[in-house]
Length: 153
Length: 395
Image: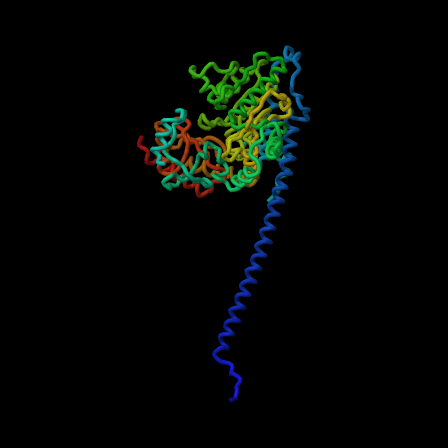
């Protein structure tokens, strides 16, 4: 009885090739997905960092503008707690003296512009309000002081 | 339970203080509500400006769940971190002084009134007066109610607290005349909400500020409806030429949970002393955690810009409609003045049928207060529904 080495089935070869191809395709797929995921992650992280940086910048600008608003509003400037409380003896001496119209309007306009800037309003929207509420046709001086000079296009 | 059964229970057990619309809502997400039959509604009222970050905002829900699992209430005799962090956040984002946390807007105003009276007392004022605008709405507890001229005039509810006076809206001269040495405060809304969305002019705000400064009175701005981003800035006064001494806020602050706050600038921050004021639930950990989540979402330049942009789009869309006379307000707080002869209540009821929720604060006005997170397609849909309703209106 002779034992012959079984011949390799020729029919199996293509199946093997196809399995290998399939495996390869899966590996390539997985690699592509992994790569895409890495890219997505990197993009997401980059976007998060950009957003964070924007938020930080917004906060810093808002803080600075709030400080400016504090400086502009005499009622809030450098107060010690309770500083606005008037002593009892002041009452009889105090007179009702509204601030002169021009001065208060000017301070009001600057406070309006600063507060709008704090809240993130666009330059043109602030200019529009200054025009409608304070008849200020050319608001550049006020706006430049608060927002910096307008960039030339 | 059917709507009819709910209404029967209401009729038997609830005090008759509200006229409710005939709908039972069971679910909400963003700017959309669903009733018990599965019908979808676009919510342009947001629980009267409460659900400003949308219904069931995931960030707020998560904050509430997380805090609820850890600790809900310990009273104000001890510390919780959310309460203190919220006070810091509110003060630092506005007037920089101190905060009293409350459970509602009217309670925030009660605190403001108390601060004003005690502040005036320190000036030697024995009979303090508080000046408001006619048609202002400051709340329904007795101090706030006394500063709400329309409701305070009801003799059956009297007597009110003494010393409250009102002048016509935006009458700067009348306001100046009304403020004297006995004035403790001018208490006004920067935009009247319940009256029908009527903004206070810059001139009137400046007059109020100057009149208060001249006699040492406090300027109190009630930002209960206008605050927390509603007008396109975190606080409405940021789009005005004045800063108040005291500001009150509530409604949107809790994202659906009840919370309010009275924020005092350094000028008024030291007025109240231990024992002067208090509240068992105020500043509770869960409501404070919700408020912090809301502020995380709203105190954001991109969000506020979006409110201004969507507000402009909504305003322009409405102004282009037939039968709309005017649109008042700022940001996403708009009052739509309809042409004479159109009953806004009928339009409001028709819109509810069509799946749009609005409010009718006075006979000729629709009030729109959509969530600040509303999408532009939803704004367009709302304008289209209002247009259809007005075109089909036959009285």
